Image 1 (cartoon, one colour):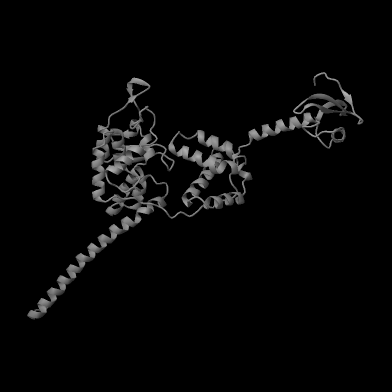
Image 2: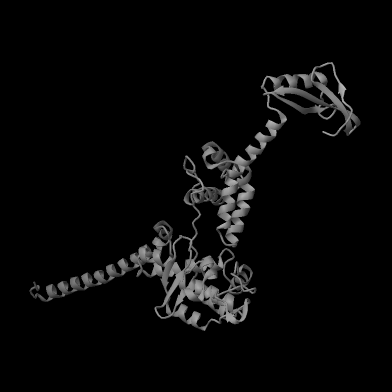
Length: 399
């Protein structure tokens, strides 16, 4: 404390000095007492700012002497320790930062960051997973359900699940939530398909597209059923022309997958130009479809929408994901591919995702069954006619 004149009060161990305040000069009260054999001298508060009086300062002094209240130093120590302990806690905020650092900068992680900041941070950011109550999550789900679609609510709750599961998986926290998050039931699974005429129009629009990167990205989605992100991450080292295989790195299902490379896909990739690597003029970019700056591409939304428009396709047809659906629908409706094989080609982690195409295979089976029925009906009808002919001639029936 700077050396200033001290003024005694009518209360023992309480004095004040005159300091500068917002209203001008004001009294700053101090208390002096002994604790554990040591003399402690500390500020009690300001006359106007803290509404401090000699009587209130004396009351604070009595509590400190009786150890009913900590000293200012003890308070500062406790606050410092509390902050240190708080920094060591794996709160949802801290788990989110670790989760985000382990993900590449893509459109999906940007969407997740928006969802976290908008819907999860305020409610759960400062909490540890063990402190989150089911009632808290239920309240969030109900509140979101009033203004958001069920699919959006499900995405938000799935993100909370993933963040906490990441913490458990990486050993950052010992246990996750003590309950299973209830999520909205979604009935809007969409299976997009194109007629032969629509597909022909799309291929014509693609052939007329001057951007070879965009053209071949969309064609590869149609030829292989690969996801947009899988195509954007595809590297030349992932393509095995000798064995006609494509390795899909870190797919949506998690583990790397290998799919066969059919003739149209092989021809496309063999003729696709290798782009220059911006890191060195003499080397080629390891990415098959890099962006203009040579880095991993994030989107082709604008040019793909223009191609959709030129082809005259419906506005709700999603150019990239829709082509994946077209690939799957063609195989399912052929009746020659079982659901397990289709699941492997689409790298679905769960067969439930592939079941959306089961009705197409059922329709192909119905057509085959109808064809068999027609053939048998024709044979039965022919046999009946033969019996009638023999009976008319009085010929004995063949046994």
